[in-house]
Image 1 (cartoon, helix red, strand yellow):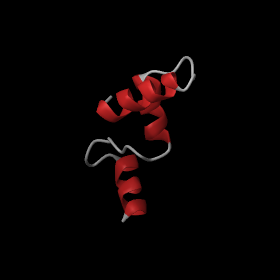
Image 2 (cartoon, one colour; image 1 turned 60 degrees about the horizontal axis):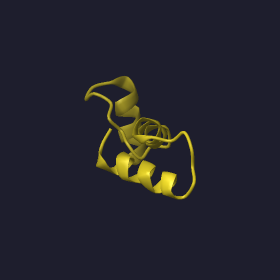
Image 3 (tube, rainbow, N blue to C red; image 1 turned 135 degrees about the horizontal axis):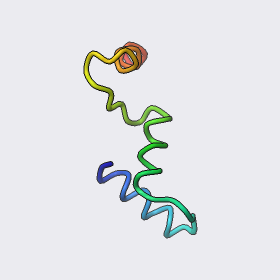
Image 4 (cartoon, rainbow, N blue to C red; image 1 turned 60 degrees about the vertical axis):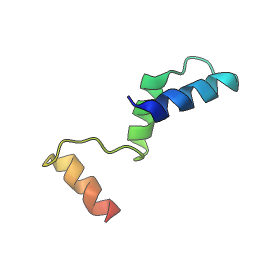
Length: 53
């Protein structure tokens, strides 16, 4: 998790969203491609890097 997911979770809660926290927000950010924290050399990480480039 990072500061961005914590801030986004807090903002969503202030807007009335329930059952949302930094962990679920971070996982969502990973799933939509905002965060790519695969280990260097990982097959998936390399594929994502090729898509971004």
